[in-house]
Each structure stands twice: as C-alpha cells, then as structure tokens.
Image (cartoon, rainbow, N blue to C red; front, side, top):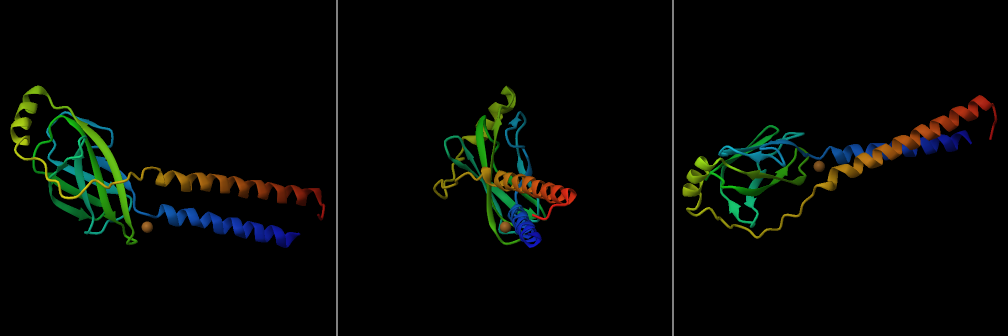
Length: 182
Ligand SMILES: [Cu+2]
C-alpha cells in the first residue's frame, strides 16, 4: 500500500511540473497605453513589457476598429521591452495592438490588447489634419486570432492539483495516526 501512495504522489509531482513549463512562455505583462485605457493626449509611441526577454524578431501592429493598419516605425526589442513609434497621431477611435513576439525559448507568442483615443477637441483637429493623409497601410490580411484565455488554464490545473496533493497528504497522515495498515 505504501508503494501505491508513493507512486501516486510522484505522479502528482510530475503533473505539477507541467503547468510551470507552460507558464514559462513569454507573455505580455503591461503596456503603454494599457489595455482598456482611454487616451486623451496624442500618442507617439507604444511600449509593451513582457515577463521575459524578447527576441529582436518580435514585432507588433496597430489597427483601428475598421481593421485598417496604422504605420508603426522603429519597432525595437530591448530586453523585455518592445516599442515602436506611431507615424501619425491616432484620431479618436478604438485601436487594437497585436504583438507577435519571439520569446527567450524561441516560441512565437501572440498577444492582443485594445485602447481607445478620445482627444480633446483642439488637439483632435490637429490630429485629423495629419491623420487623414494616407493612414492606411494595408500590408497583410487580418488573421489575428486572439489568444487571451491561454494563461488561465494552467493556473486552474495548478489549483486542482495542489488540492489533490493536499487531500492525499491528509489521507496519508490520517491513516498513519489511526495506526491502520490498509
Ligand atoms: Cu515557450
């Protein structure tokens, strides 16, 4: 019987190790502007911070609600940061940033976040003057599936497994206390 417990515990330990390898993937930690933010001042740069270093192949794109792509220049990866400059001031509207990064482990990962622009009236006029001059740079068709739920699954699995480990430990201790040899 003792061996069975040992094998059971070892299996659980191995299963516990699995979620950690999954969560080691590079993921978006924070951004400027933040996801869901409403921007009131003209935006010149977008910066993303990841939980690991990112490779220089990493890139991102900005699209408005009509899926029109806005030009971003000077995209660069610096350690765990990815940034790029906006060539034109974004006029009022909703925007989605899709970053395609290559993490430290070489895995390509895609992250998406959205923000909206609501400029004050005076600067909005200036933005429109600059923005209407050919902002659309359609380079590739929109095939950016969102991958938002990817990180929650390992956590759920982890919690369930921790509960299982706890339960089995309690059972073992109880059996030992009772002095029974099952
Ligand atoms: Cu990975």
